[in-house]
Every structure is written in C-alpha cells, then in structure tokens.
Image 1 (spheres, rainbow over the protein chains, first blue to last red):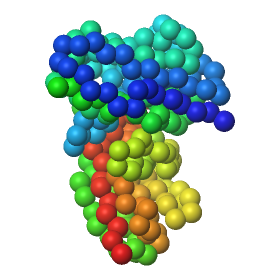
Image 2 (image 1 turned 45 degrees about the vertical axis):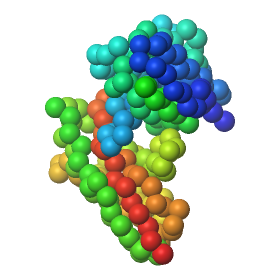
Image 3 (image 1 turned 30 degrees about the horizontal axis):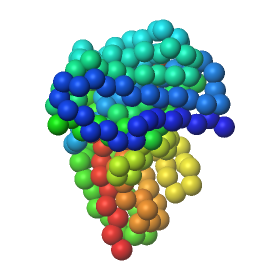
Image 4 (image 1 turned 180 degrees about the vertical axis):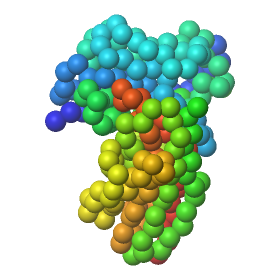
Length: 111
Length: 109
C-alpha cells in the first residue's frame, strides 16, 4: 500500500530564515505530487505540482519554491520566510488523474 | 475565475441526517471531490463524483448536478466522530483541485 510522509511535523522559524520541508511517497512510482498551504480560516491553496522529476509548475507567485530531485521526493523551500508564510503545509500524491491523497502535514509558525 | 461556496458551519444531533451543500463555478470541470478534515489533521478522501447523480458509500452519499454547478454531501446516522470540516473541491483538469473553505460540522449528543 502507498504511504506519504512529511517532516517536520511542526516548525517555528524567525522571519527571514530559510525553510525546507520534505515529502516522500512510498509504494508507488511516478506519482503526481502537490504542495498545498492551508492558512487559518481559508481553504487549501495549491502552491506547486509536479508530474515528474525536475518538472515543477507554480500556481501562486510567492517567495516559495519547490523541487523534485527524485521520483518520490518533493521539497518545498524558501530563502527568506515572511510572517505570511505561516500555515499548515500539506503534500499530496495522485496516480495519474486519480484521487489526491494527503500527507500528515507540517505546521509552520513564522515569528 | 474560480469560486467554490459552502456554508461555514453547521450543527446537528447525533443520529440525525445532515446535508452539506456546495456550489462551484470553475474554469474547467472534471469532477467534484469531498474530503473530511478533523482539526489539526490532513484531509482524507470521502468521495468523487464525475457524472450526475447520487453515489452512496455506507453512511455517506454525494450528489452532483453539473448543469447546476451543485453538489451535496449527505451524512446519515451521525456520530460524534463525524464532527470535522468537510471540504468540497472542483477538479479543474489535470488533477488541479480548487477547494472551498470548508464546512465545519459540529455533532452534539
């Protein structure tokens, strides 16, 4: 069966510091991968998606970036965090045009 | 533009039936998803409607009318553990989902 992991689970970072969140998927190959952010009181916002290694599509212009160095690894990064980057970051995977399944999420607080 | 509307909050009693509505207006439509999200946790998949009509899965059913841009999630025999947020999402193509802000359901004894 497929499993999706995210780490860290929680993170508190000062404004201006860098960020690296990691997501890995097991039990499937060549998945579509997604990064979402859920801010308090708002819906899930798609940030990036990837259909293969090195292929990244950005949905919302911002100071975040994503990379997919391996088939089942998806990384979300920032060089300098802003207060507005606080939120619940969720990684999801899908097989082709199938249902998206979410990881446990990373709660980020920028102070 | 992309617009998904669902009520912010609903309350219901244990054992009752509740219907959570969702209307959508999105550029491109390939189906409608419902997810359940307990506080502090990730969303979990409930249902996916591509064609018009009702899909039943145990206590949960989901309905879609593409001509009306409307869907609902029906929860029967409510249990306390059903207290959660229910997210409606439109599949706009290539599995790009647009989510509503979610409906927080509170089930009371």
